[in-house]
Image (cartoon, rainbow, N blue to C red; front, side):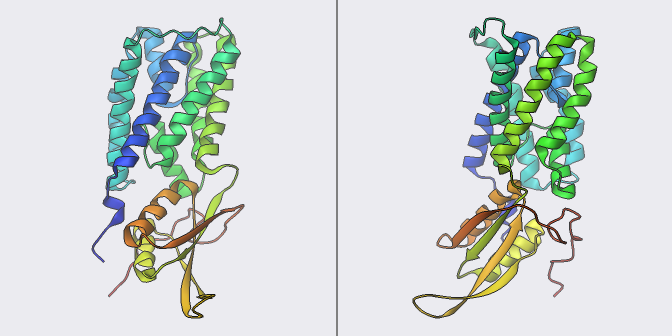
Length: 296
């Protein structure tokens, strides 16, 4: 088939990425910066630049992300790059917008409340945009590559990268604010993981469709995932029909749903949690690019 579902950019994805960026930017401006809390990753670097040189994060976000996006282009597909560019621009835009909005949230100088509010708001926003295939650039690109190729959850990678940047952040904040920043980072990463996958490592999907072969071709070539064909029988018609079984990471579930929806809107899908999945085709020591491609 010539139709490549991966290349399609959907309005609903861009909308959810926009909402996610708005929430994350709101947390950075109204909770982190307002309460002198640092952040991890590239956002943390932009806050360091603001703390030391008063450089606006709305501008430094774009400038720092350019080389990382160019790096990510080698590993991510066309749609992922489009979504990453869009997410990076939207984050910068909302960082600028929220600085112009004269809204002050009075937490009575309670750093615990500030850290919790920042973690919940920022984590929810980031988890939402990740779930719909986007990132805000920066270390998000690195975390997404680690999840795709090594099976390390995005939230876990982001947490360790956060810690590295947080240590450097001690050049402009004191230890007390750092302690609450670490609390914020933990809440942030846990919420991202929860939105993406709950407490589970993978998702199992059973698919019944009249276009089984088309779905198999797309899953194998676009997602580079294996597909098992189970032999089922209709309870009413007693006709034989294939049942496809696919195991994907939580962040890939959206891509699989898009593929099935585009090819067969009447397809029946059952999605369930998988506690552990081991074996080639899922363990992120991903198969070679030619393993599932047709040779003739």
